[in-house]
Image 1 (cartoon, rainbow, N blue to C red):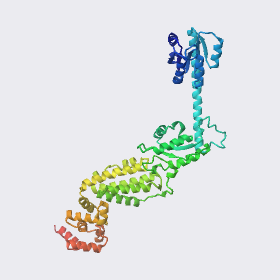
Image 2 (image 1 turned 90 degrees about the vertical axis):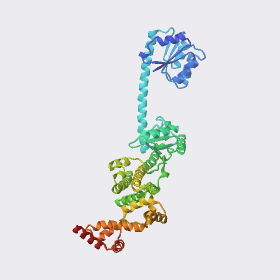
Image 3 (image 1 turned 45 degrees about the vertical axis):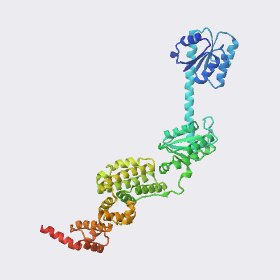
Image 4 (image 1 turned 30 degrees about the vertical axis):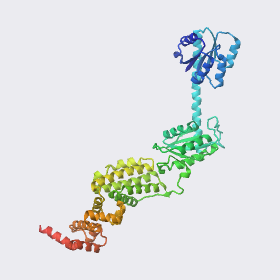
Length: 505
């Protein structure tokens, strides 16, 4: 508790400070005043719990000071000190709400008893005030829950006194936020924190913005807001003008909040108009994962980071408009990454595949709160693998093409499709390929395939038609033609000669 001593005589002020043990009575001396106007100013600024006030002071009479203090809303205790045993002064002091009237010279025991009694009254009042505040806080919280749920307002029984609870306003708007601390910081910066009632819900925080002016300040702050990387997201319900429509504002905000995962990195706040008109149903199968992984892996082998980025951006754009659970979308994306990683590991070794523990990858990426955060994680992982594969293959595009052909000879390889993967014009790519390898692209591809066919023909259990498919020739007759063209014998003749040579040795 704080006490202010006001008397125009310095010796009296000093005596009052030392005549009793203020600390033991629960008081700290917060200041002194030598005139009535100084006392009023310190009451205004220091808000003491108790004032020892001399009646006869310069510039402003003590009782006038007390009246003015009451007029500005100060409700502390006053002990009037006077050298005049005038009944009129006592009557005036009572009308000003003075607790006690003591005559000078001050009796130490009487002052001690009076201060002790007043201290107990102040403590009782503080306790009662805290109890009232706690009851109001609980009542306000319960009413807020009912307003959001549509259980309070028009027709509610018993009727709710919103004005008494500090909830009455001309307009309302519900804001759902995540995370709450960043949202509260934004509201403070927008100067509407005092007009926003916060309510902690199960997985989010609801702010009820009260008053048309506060709603307009909120809208102005949102328009001038720029993404700052804080990760905060605000879902805005519509503005309503009556308390029983607050539940409608809450439902609007909840629909937006439940889609927060899908909004882009530049979306700090969203409302109903920002939702997709018709979200696309989304389900995925293993074939969808393989198809996307194939595409990304081909660009990765080609070292074409630009096409990888375009592919991921397209996926992010399409996924942003789907109707699906966030964990389903996250699993879909993480499985694509894992398949690409496993292929890199098989083709280029574990060192090029990056993080070895798939469980860590799943935990880290699936723990992200927003789609764009998962996509950022994918970009970083794929960028690292692209750089690692480039180190294995070499920096020159033809070196990467040769490595690509040797690892993918069994597929339907065409110069035109490789040119797209590597980001080059097909005619130019064919020209520099021949210049560096000494052979046209198709001739080089045939030689790699025939070389692999030679290895497979050493296995007598493999049929020639199966070997043909494995090395990239779907038509067996065409395989026979190519094999004979380059080795001047048929596949079966080659197998026979190899097996005979093995038995003779």
